[in-house]
Image 1 (cartoon, rainbow, N blue to C red):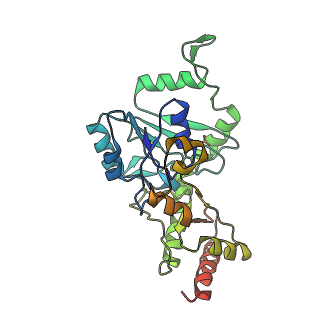
Image 2: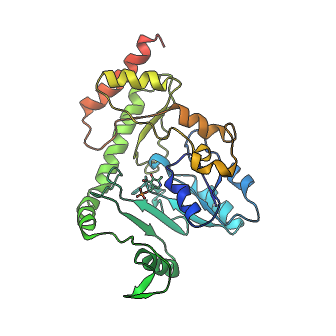
Image 3: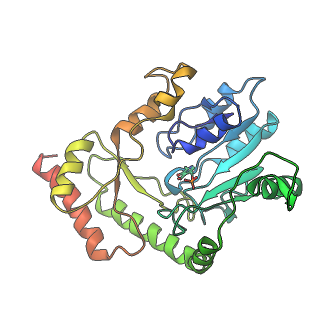
Length: 292
Ligand SMILES: Cc1ncc(COP(=O)(O)O)c(C=O)c1O
């Protein structure tokens, strides 16, 4: 199964859990999502599926990916864990492939108060199988047809999510507004700013810039009370758990470089305009002090 190495470990972990082998394909340097051209080159007769990841909320190039997947008869599972509510030309992310996976981890755009998740599909047979898998492989109590999991969404989480879901669009719109404001305020600095795509193509789970001076900028912002995050410090093909796959540093250089340069600035719908300006001014101050 082919996926991107610039993602959270779970994307590939579930491939390994199935007994399949994750094959990593490098990313587009602008969108940071899987590069369709490289994806096509990596397909072999053993390839079964593709897992594009809408990383940080930015839509992968689904029209190119679906075109390649259908011409090679590949199954597509979208990892939409960071992109709930996002869309491409009015069609929701997670609904392009055979199935879409979403996470309700508390920090997500739609977060529960604990763990939870969702699978979407328009394939009735697959939907039934997923429903069975979440409850120990059973449709009828104490009649287990499959080896499944204990993976039901508990009532507490469902109650929280049901209320928060009503605010999702409004919160995603506010995230986008904040991101566009950051992009405007930071535009002439020596940074790579996130590509917002068309309306709806980015729901800014994270606002992630790329900079050659990550550690220095991070420390500078911290000293001014601005917390930042690094997503992710190491690409999956270089993770110790995947040492046996035999990848080396340099194999997927765009992802490796993104891992060395990424820095996420504060991003949540409740940020005030004053806070956005404070953060942007602090980033600007760092470069001004260096004479950039
Ligand atoms: C891109 C991505 N894939 C998969 C996951 C796994 O989701 P969960 O932690 O809900 O299992 C996450 C988040 O945790 C994620 O960000």
